[in-house]
Length: 59
Image (cartoon, rainbow, N blue to C red; front, top):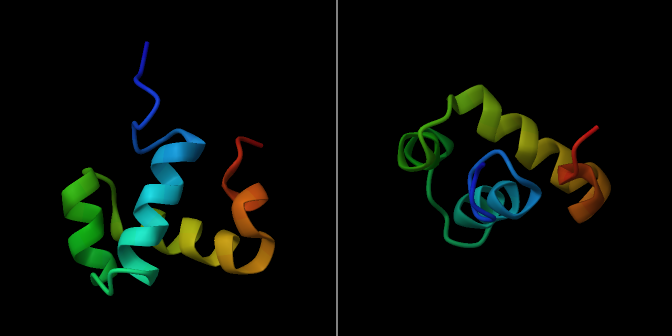
């Protein structure tokens, strides 16, 4: 079982997106911090920009 703020939960995805967009941290640094790939961060940022928080939900 994963915890609520794990990077692959909607809450964790939102935290990743906010680290990049609100805090100005480069995607590569956010990826290292959350232990995911840079393309993963880019995907969540793009979905957030297109759909808001709804884009971060499991599909």
